[in-house]
Amino acid sequence: MATVQASELQVIAGGGIAVPFKQIAAQFESASGHKLHIRFGTAPELIKMATSGVPFDLGVVPRDVVKDAAARAQFAPGSTPDVARVGIAVAVRAGAPKPDIGTPEALKQTLLEAHSIASIPASATGAQLAEVYEHLGITEAMRTKTKAQATPAAIVEAVASGEADLAVFGINVLMDPRLEIVGPLPREIQREVVYVAGIAAGSKDAEAAQAFITYLRSPAGAAVIKANGLNPG
Image 1 (cartoon, one colour):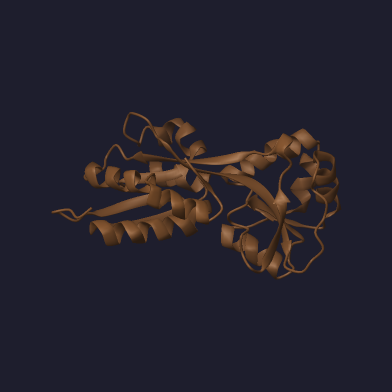
Image 2 (spheres, one colour; image 1 turned 120 degrees about the horizontal axis):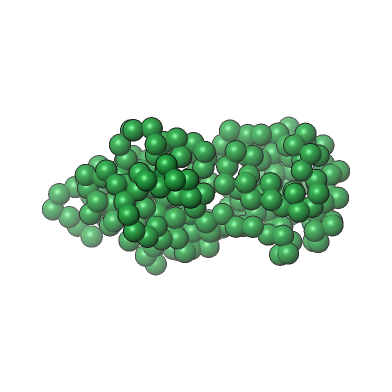
């Protein structure tokens, strides 16, 4: 993938895929000579980044971001291909008893019995969870029980330290040795966050940005995505 002219790409990306994204970026940098400068954030933060006027070359973001009209306008016309998707899971501190979440009713009872739940309500996953809670009829109860965290890493820390009983977020974020994943949400109410890739309308190096998107969707990129608990495409 050697190129004649190396570029420095400004990238915005979803915090929920930070671990595999950093690995793929490092591989791409090594193979191409391009350099990536990445800013991670939640969906609302990424919308602000895209519309702030600060230049960027590409985004790998939750689909919610490009559904926002102002943010979508900052991306080049055309498709924004899916690159990864991940479902929601529940985790406890390593060694703690695992509650029953095998059915929607069992999940509802487990959530209601928890003293505190670590998550990020202001995120693409949080938006999906809000739909799950509404379906279960526990929206108000979850609002009081949820301990909002600033980053995916903070979710893990909150449960590992005992600050929260449960973590409810993307399963890939919860794959940490300090936690034990109880399981994914029941199939009937499971939701997925889908990450898409797009080149910025104002990118001065769309060719290099496209090269990274192609690498992200290649077998090498897909292998890293899969190894980190997400599904490619």
